[in-house]
Image 1 (cartoon, rainbow, N blue to C red):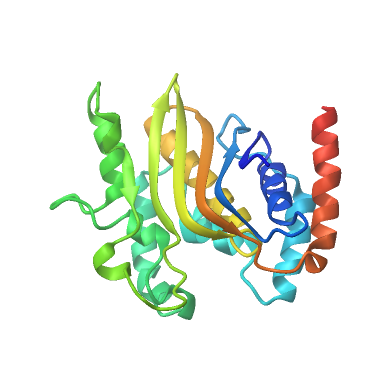
Image 2 (cartoon, helix red, strand yellow):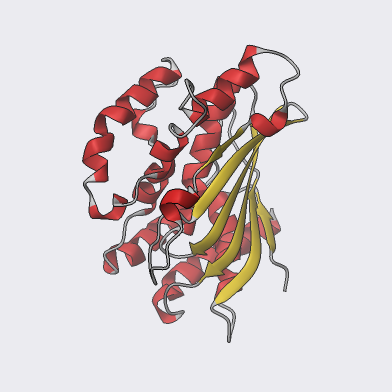
Length: 252
């Protein structure tokens, strides 16, 4: 069984990955790589709305966060005005960050807040540091274009369940005139989180690509352990939508 999935369409890529963890006798996959490669001229990712709607129905029935809510934990797209400076986005987020931290789901922090903090002295905003370093001069060392999420001093814990942060780090790789975004997760729930994670990472890439003035070319998400957090029976409507979309994609 291949543990590598690639598709231009985010919904189909997620669906193919979901099929891997719903095979008979299987509930998880190790070392899963999912790549999304289809983006509009403005960087928006390609999706199949029927698949996302079907997943959201399952999530509502389980009283879980919607795909959009999960995506916003990685990139708060509603706060971003592409015509304004990126500092406006950072300022808007920091104004609401205290309120977000009071939510039970954010007890240990939020992904985007980690991305815009924790950097070097005098340049705490990691995301801004990466972008400004790239745009500030030619020939920048590309390994500087990354943001760290996992903080051992805060996050190493022997607790049986913790949740945050499953996303460990994100790198931005300018290659062949386009931006490749790479993200690593130690573990990932394929139903509750994966679709929203991919969507949020694509939107983060859209933002960074615009700031770097290069097109977004690819998102690659590497997962140490991808888990099927639910029964196959609960997922039958979603899997049916996925199969139809995959059959159409294979015909195109």
